[in-house]
Length: 108
Image (cartoon, rainbow, N blue to C red):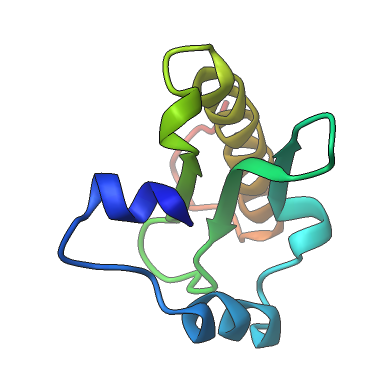
């Protein structure tokens, strides 16, 4: 994405790295990724929220996203982040509900 050239001038995310995420069983892009499109259906921003598959120790959610630099400071990134944050909380709640309880501790 064009944001890589501005955000990380010495690194561009290889297309293969993005494509590889579609082969990972713990990522459901239909639920875990959001795209922002302009009037011509061009992607202008994206956001993802991926819950790490490990269920040992702490649960971890990875958020990633970008907005086309020419569209910064228009609230698009804030809207994408709001979705990511909400999705990440959903993922944590879903995973926590499937974990066994810890004896002697009260969970809210």
